[in-house]
Length: 127
Image (cartoon, rainbow, N blue to C red; front, side):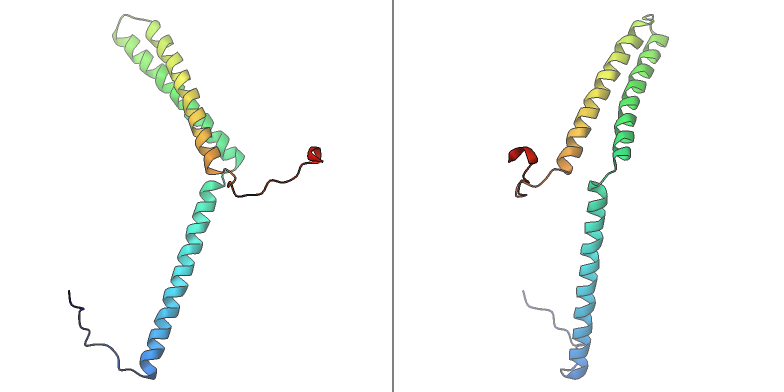
């Protein structure tokens, strides 16, 4: 394919070099700002406080138990299985909540893991 021809290019000389230099500096500045913003967002996501982690885990666990109990209650209200569907689905909701907490904790720990190339620090007990 042939290159498109740009007939509106400025003439070579000082005006053209000033415009090109200005454009290059603006592009470099924008790229730097974008990289800094991306690093800030990534740090914010990886650096959750202990309280926010606790609330996230607690809400996932409580939600699973409530959904299980609610489904059991609905089944019991339409079928003559009272109270067995509620009890069974409450226990399943509890198990699902524990599984969600374990899975989420594993993901959080993997996201904040220490890189493998980090040197180990000596401990007082090592000496």
